[in-house]
Image 1 (tube, rainbow, N blue to C red):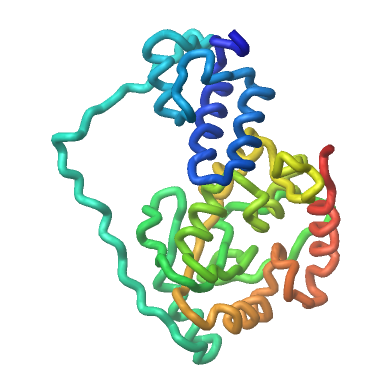
Image 2 (image 1 turned 90 degrees about the vertical axis):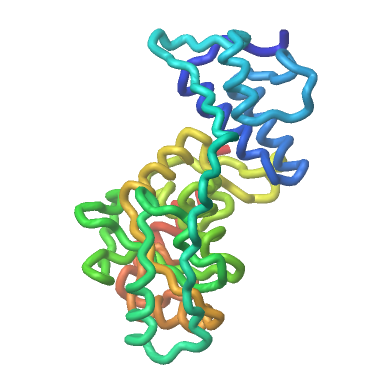
Length: 283
């Protein structure tokens, strides 16, 4: 046996997340994730099965069979619920009108107001599966991590704006699946900015560290996802004119986490600090 067969709850949950993270990735990315599972958590799926590849469900099956042991005394294995006989209706996707061209800032902001997404409570299906813009705000009583320089924040719908962005392909994929639950700061500048403000250490994203791409370790990525879901609200606007609208939004709100395209002298010291934190790597 190459690895361990006894793990803590935290370890097994991390392994399950990494296993599912491999799905849909390139061979080199899958190899990097597999090596992290083996080197960090000492888990070798080949110790238990000849099957190629595995998911969190395979790990849960090993726990239920007793081949993997959990060291926590009160741990309860996941319960398998068979729902084949239940015809669950698929969540109905909301239809969103697509703005073809900006008609002024007031018009733009009025259309943003009707598309509000709370990652803590709302289904991702309410987010338009089309290109567009988005505004990220702090929920009431939520604050950015405290650093040496305090940013000046403007408000939208009574909430403090921290970032605006564009999705050239799909708002749903970019905003929810990469920002809120992507668990990979290497593919989300927003996640990277928030993570370094929390003091999380950047590590190489790829198996080849010379690429310069970075992310956080799996524990910090999970903490970051939880914080974002608990503390952020997103407004979105389906539009094909996203590049021009992004300029208008940055000029109007001066979001502190927007480094590119933001030359406002207010928050310049904060942006300089953020840039320096993002440039640091833990190697």
